[in-house]
Structure formats: structure tokens, C-alpha cells
Image (cartoon, rainbow, N blue to C red; front, side, top):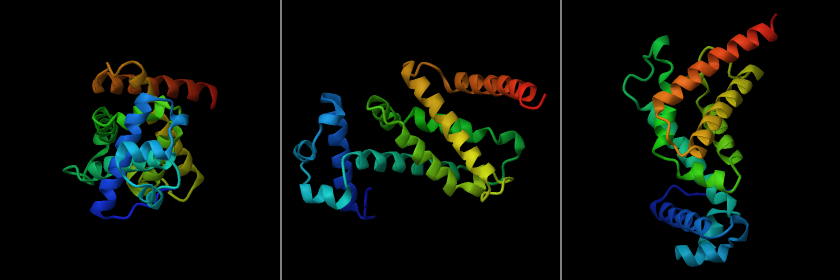
Length: 196
């Protein structure tokens, strides 16, 4: 677990630790990276590392949570938020793709070390904190809501990981078209096979 205090000095130390870890992941296998390696690369003391993190994976969890939080905060600050009609609801998907188009480092890192579950958990956490915003018509205390949140996180991660693995060549418009067509196909399949 990470224990980050909301002050500038702590933030700077954590950023140095994260950047050192990213550089080390580019140099050698994640499993062989030690806290001493991070300490030497970041110039941040061992005590500072342990004041903020319990272990190395916590550094990536912190960054994943931070990116998801910034994504959500950016969306909530968009002009006209809260006054959108039904035709504009796809806007959150466009925003999601745009955000990650410019912030892929953590996703690429988690893919490289086979820990994309970290991003999944970060997305679940942020979607649950935005419960009334994402699915305002669903009872956020219900099991249905938990399944909808899991589905939303899974689809987002599926698209991000596929897009990155293909070299990020598809445009946002391409991704939206694929998503739209996929939902149409899935709807027909589900309607025909689940409720005949």
C-alpha cells in the first residue's frame, strides 16, 4: 500500500521514485529490480521510500490511481458537465480515449510487466467514486451497478491494451466506430441467445 502525504516535498520524492522505476523497467526485468536500485537511480533515501510505499509494486499502483483520478477530475471539469443530454453521453467514451491517448506510459508499463490488473482496480475505484455520474439511472448500491462498473472497466482496458499492442495506430474515431459496431453485434447476439 502507498501512504502519500499531500505536500510538495512528498510529491516530488514520489515522482522521482516513479521515474526511477520506469527507467529501471526499461533496463531489466521487473522482478529483479530492488529498492536499492530505485534508491540509487532516484537519489531518494531508503527511509523516504518506505515512508511512502510498502513495496515496489505500490509505486505503480500509486501512479495508476493518480492517472485515473486525473482522468476523472478532467472529465468533471469539462464545460457543460451535468447539462448533457442523452445524445452526448458517448462523450465520456471520447474523453476516456483522448485522455489515455496522451497518458499511455503507465498502461504500457503495466502491460510490459503483466500487471494490467492494477489499472483495472484503479478504474473500478474511480468509477465507484463517480457512481452517481456514470450511471445516474442505476441504484449505486445494487449488484447491477457493480457489474456495470466491472463491464465498463473491462471494456476500457480491453480497448487500451489492444490499441497499444497494435502500436497505437488507430484514431479515436476508429476506436469509437469499432466500439459502436461491437455493441451492436453484441446486442443482437445477446438478445437472440439469452432472451430467445
